[in-house]
Length: 171
Image (cartoon, rainbow, N blue to C red):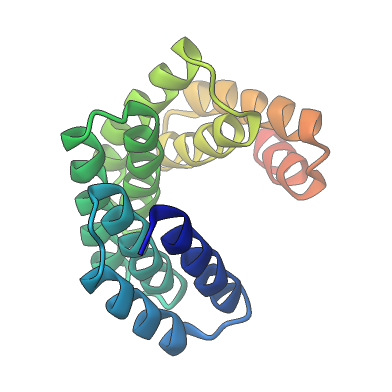
């Protein structure tokens, strides 16, 4: 199966995930993970596992899969995708209450995003989760900086929900 066919199957499975069909998504992920011929394809289908596990509260399992995805991108030297995976790792650490681990991951992603061309949504989401992690470590002044940046990026995109969340934390 070609990479474009694998991507199409991933997109189909992602749509099922968005509809809440977790079991079906995991079956697709298992099937296609076995047929993955490239590290990129493997990472793609590991993402299905990771996201379904995250969606269903299986955070440790999601974390393990996102760490594996990050390792794959390190191996193939795709720094942008590595940083995206690392953002998810940081987010999961935050959700698990491991704020120091979250901050160590997320500060790398924030720094990377400032130095490279990264889409605005990625920047907004990174500042949001980093602000949460810093806020939970009782560093209000640093959190405020990242809430403000997140708010600005979400506003540029017209994502009202993101803007409102950031503003709620800034009050």
